[in-house]
Length: 467
Image 1 (cartoon, helix red, strand yellow):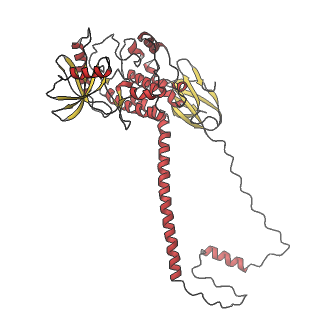
Image 2: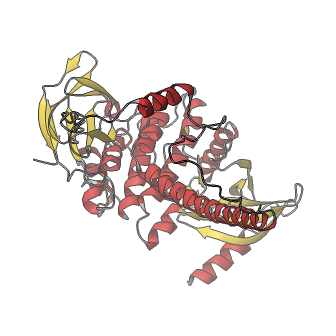
Image 3: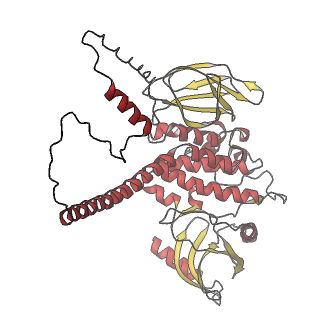
């Protein structure tokens, strides 16, 4: 069966979906579980999306309908610009369906078919999903199926998180104890093991999505589900920077922390994840370029306007001078010895005029008088110690970093500006203190090639990219 024939049959089979209220317009997508249609709500006169579940051999439509009802009830608690709204849910002619907000755009999965995103684009999308998750988690809702195909992006790069169909409301008992919920390639290790999922599980999944967006490949891409689940639980993927060198070191650190196997080693919440993304420097550099261009355009405009003003003033002065120029005064000779009288509005201040009179009354020094001593030369400014380099720091878990005994803030940090030379670095976490580690910072350690220093309190080991 061709895709066109399948789509036509799917559209025909769904014509009976509440025709008194919804007018089906076109098929938006079709997957293994069901079809999504674009439709018009006749009662409210608005365009919506309708997701239906296709019949499959052995499929429990009652359970599926219950899942969709759960999606509607869960999503009804959420009202956020970064979350696709759910309007209605039900069954018609035995087919379960859910009516959702119609959002023009494509999924992140579709966008990645053209290759990985630029780091600033990927971080921009991840930040929006972080905000949506922070809101959902504050309402007691865990998504549990964050993946690239559940992230919708429009032409203006506004992102929305969709499909809370497997979301778990934290303050209600779970019905799936011991069941594996989610998509294997994106789920957190605790989910893969059939354990409880919490907000940090969503952050792991978002870390997987960000990894995929930056590299164009999934970090856990086994040939079968069993291999994928094994890798999720036991294997650390290749760092994203090794897959795509355009990924800055600080962003590489953020992604790898989000994908930590132990939930305690991940970011404590979505807000902390978002803050780490913002501090990675990716968007700062992008915005700095935009601000520079905007400033340059404004400066050019002001420069042109200033030149026009200067030219106008100069022309005006010249014209006024030509029109009102007084005749030149007659020159009358005066005795050579006579000192010119000081005009009453002389620009010299009183003290300066007194000094001038005293100097005029003083006779010239004799020829054999010693020359006055030359003024002492001003001491030269000390030579600069060198352009500061970049030190990228991180610790597991979150810690405070000290450089030469000075508190430099909390990790992770993309670029600590430190003068070149030898420096002592250590980390402090709770009442635990790492040993001091000596690093040699050079001019080659720029924002794009920072000297990376990290410490793992679990193993007691330092790791630098200089080793």
